[in-house]
Image (cartoon, rainbow, N blue to C red; front, side, top):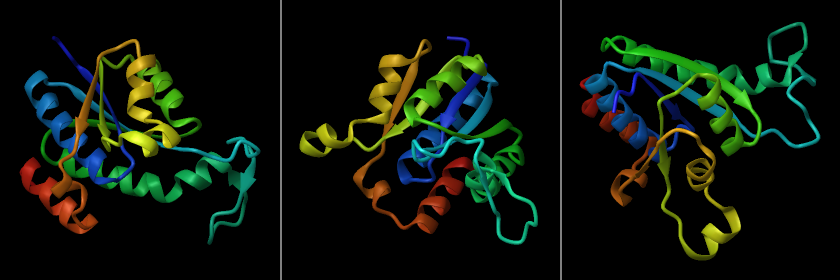
Length: 171
């Protein structure tokens, strides 16, 4: 394995935090770049080019910018923390079908691997909701590493999860 570019889908859940923690370890081991990706799923009737208003901004902006406004800040905050630890990190916010967009972005960015968190749902919940990670595994042309987050880590409060992740990353 000579992974130099790792795509890490981030939805700010404990599951994606667990995947990010592993991706950081892999990035250090392989001297790889991390591509953090957040995908927002817009209603089918609203294409990303439709216009919306951001509070405090006079002009209208494309829906993709509206959706990405706060997310971009959060993603960049994570990226800055990782850059402060000497890692190379890029960020992207996109709108679309989550699994399809992850696969497309992996190809576009020429990722060597995708590191993705999974909730580990089974049974009826899995049948009804499906699994983004499963769809990515089936559709990706590059290796996909799925990270199933432990029950304890999954049920932590967001602040505690961030503290745990910071401790794991040496922050």
